[in-house]
Length: 133
Length: 232
Image 1 (spheres, rainbow over the protein chains, first blue to last red):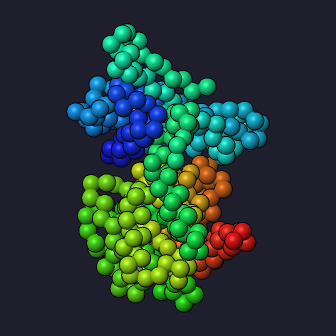
Image 2 (cartoon, each protein chain N blue to C red):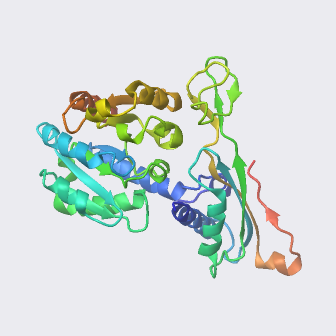
Image 3 (spheres, rainbow over the protein chains, first blue to last red):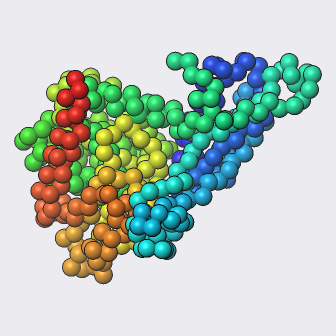
């Protein structure tokens, strides 16, 4: 159940973010994560452990929004991209080349956090989205 | 340290672990110690390999072992019998070592010896082909073991472990005559997911291949630590 440890890491990162950047009254609505398909994270379990871990904390009520990123490799023989599969031994179907370059699938990223300060929530409940550019 | 918000967002979910892992690695570099993270499924022969390798390597290197185990200290006792300092790390419910646990193990180790005298530090991870692959502990190299009794398909079923490994030891090759398993097929499957991995077939029982494995260690130690020496 390594998702417990993943959750612990996530909470540490969010705690640090709050201390360094956000107002201490910041209330988090949604945390947007990118989780690659070639990681050992099961999004459903991560959501489950996150909800259990934040109950009663400053993050109580915050939602995890997880975008799964496909596993894509690049065939170095023809430069084409492909989806590596265990059935195909992760080799490229075009040229039967071994998996050298991974284009995507290893992501474990906090992409953005939607939060509001108590002042804003008194005036309007619009979430302030901080998109990474 | 004060990071701008843009850096905090877009950060890796495992940043806390990676930060600690880098801290551990800084210690290893300062001590000029080659750190190896040894991983495999339970029973693939991590401890047996160390029991075979350590007495031979002890003739040229000073070594220590951080021994990860979920509940027992049985493996640590086996390795202590070889005469190498062992710090057991009982992980409890956790199925892998993380960088903070290894940092705790290093503190205990430093109470027993001067790390500057070490040449090589073994981190024997918890038997598990899934989670340890994702949690760095500050190692210079990941060593994965796959025993021939586990079957040819395991590199394809646990791809992340074999992708992340720098060297894969195919263990228990003394059993090959009794198994419907082709060594070449195992090698091909490992190289399909990780063409850059060194693959070394060994038997801790008969000693076959152990010389090749030790030669890999010597060159790893030289290639990994020599650039750091040059920079110092």
